[in-house]
Image 1 (cartoon, rainbow, N blue to C red):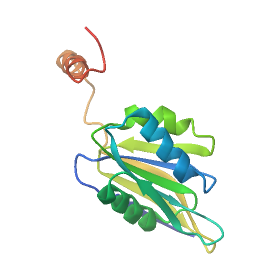
Image 2 (image 1 turned 90 degrees about the vertical axis):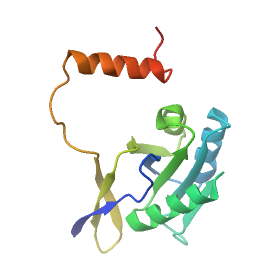
Image 3 (image 1 turned 45 degrees about the horizontal axis):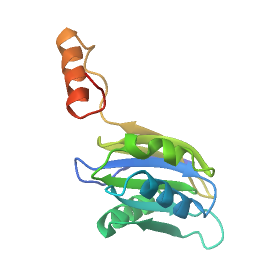
Image 4 (image 1 turned 60 degrees about the vertical axis):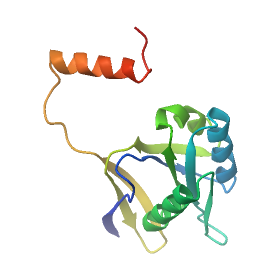
Length: 161
């Protein structure tokens, strides 16, 4: 077995969600979950089918993001994994609806950070072992950091007051 990392290719500010599912119906169901949540979010989705023709199935409302999701899905190549790339919205806007899709088994990450996917490859295929999401902590927040965090959340509308 070989273990290696695949760097997620994306523009710096672009958010993505990486998860695992279990059925070809995933593409339509995740697409519908995102569209039902917000009509303004632009997204691209790619799902690695792991049996039959074993194709990367894809969908979305932005051709560039669909292409980005497809390239990353092919690079990772793990059966039943999926990528969703988002613009004009954040993972927090669609994460619970995606997790509620019956065939979604797990979410590995939801981030705009630079990320690497840790992949194991055997004779039969590939699996995602985990994700390196951003950097390691540089310290512990102090009082000023707490105030900055609270102000930021209120400024972007996630908290009231």
